[in-house]
Length: 346
Image (tube, rainbow, N blue to C red; front, side, top):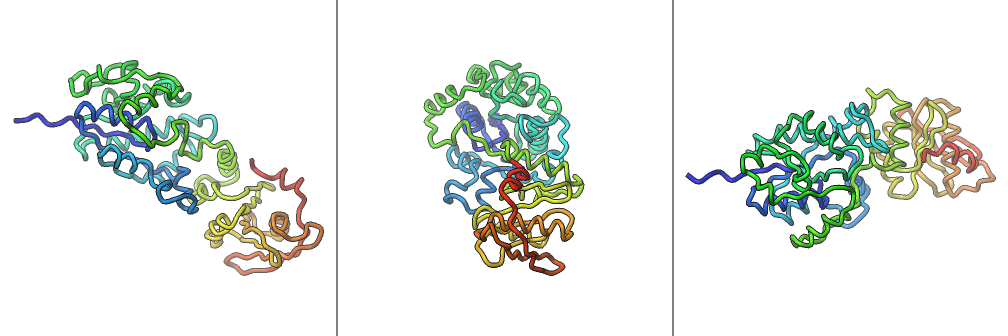
């Protein structure tokens, strides 16, 4: 009876490294299945929601890898559990709001659950030793492997020769001599390997797909956690951080102002949840008021809305304020740019 073909399950981000890792294993005749996890924080998902970009550019890059390398990729939604983790990660945040260690452990635990479902012998990733300072140093790679329950069954083909042999290698399921020893932040070896394997049209190696690594988004993220009960925060709140200018006036008042028509349209979807403001007699933004709905806060939010509109800055502006309880018109002088610059979360 013919031996069963070795089968590997891989975390496929759509970037160059995970695609190369899959290609190295397929070159050995190993069957590959990919999994791509949707955390809710991918910049590409947001561009898709906003309708920014062509259909080709908005396609999930993991599905492009699927088409290019001809192996199946399953898309798995982990937004709900990721949200809870991101608000309180066990191993903390990276340079910005990125909980990379906890994120990796969560994904690998889910992948481990899928191993039997797809009949895989082990799991692989495109990680490179020393490439990322938080999650890809030797000690953190070991920590991630241990806490995901995958000790001995987590293969990193691009750096395997610099790491202890895995059980699949020891059993002869994977030829260790055909694996690599990449290390560090340079991407030149990966680019050279892609050329050697005939892989073209891959995303920029230095690119990223996670809002949590963006400094501006991180400041809004931590502001939200500071001023809101974590138990009452949902994915829509974090999605809203991606859109508009965010101004923190005081503990019980934040104002979100659209910067263009696409953002105005997006913010209008949140009208049922927030008090919404628009200037009556001049073109301008849609603004959302988050916080205590009292007249003082309405007047401040209205003055901010007028400031970013085409209304004259030296005259009183009429601003429509409405929510589920009704609507009114507030007359205010637009606030000065010195104050908006002070309040802007940036």
